[in-house]
Length: 199
Ligand code: ZN
Image (cartoon, rainbow, N blue to C red; front, side, top):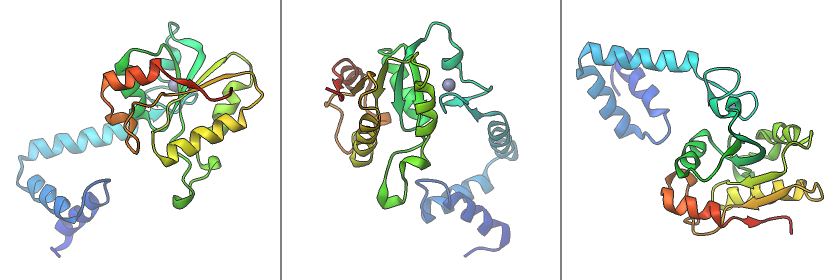
């Protein structure tokens, strides 16, 4: 344990995802020994990002206005929605250039073990988007793990009989993995070979 603010800094860093106590300590001392200008710049970027970045009211992606740049882009196909867990998955799929529709970010996946149910995700918002029949195709691109599969199954069951085309990204993605870590070629192929869930 360190004194006062040093320990406060270590504690705060240790609350970030993926940062254990040792890393928190190492980063804290790195910052304390760094140039004041560098640390000030980091603090400013954090403050500005937190105050300016918001989430798209339609799809839940990161945005700097009410709607994200994908939702306001007239060239995007409004009849297809690709459902993902996190905003970083949008970035991964955009890199493949396989998809010209819009997205819907759920904010996670169904995980009873962690106490996350359908009502904790942006599923109601998704169903609202589907209500006016503009959307004809839903591509479910949740992570290829148990929670992602459970979420995909829940969505396809809930939308059974709606006449919507529902597909799931093909296998070839590493099972148990995270979508965002898949390379562009694998993810691109998974997109091309997606399979129907409602047949
Ligand atoms: Zn959006």
